[in-house]
Length: 103
Image (cartoon, rainbow, N blue to C red; front, side, top):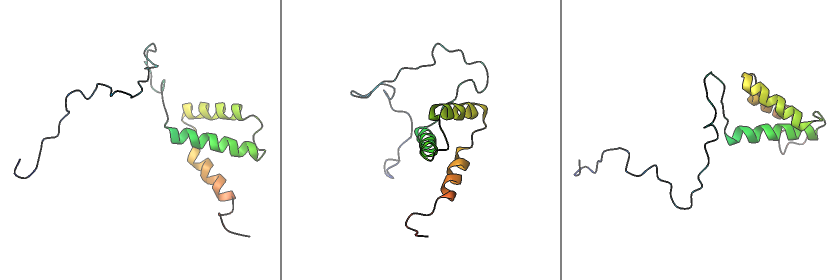
């Protein structure tokens, strides 16, 4: 294996130790007993940014008068599995003229 430059892939030692300067985040669910499906769920930053952008754009267009309430409703729909953010974003984009097109 050395002759060909191959090496085994395995977990190296001390990979769980934090590096100096890295921020350690607390585990927020340690006091919560998770005992049913969909009790705890999460989302990544891009989905949250898209949701905020959608709410902000609808508020600026005068379609939403209470951005906080609209966002709470979106979170409730997401918890129930009924939020389709992609369709909302694509729907908003299809109503706008393309950038650079004069018409």
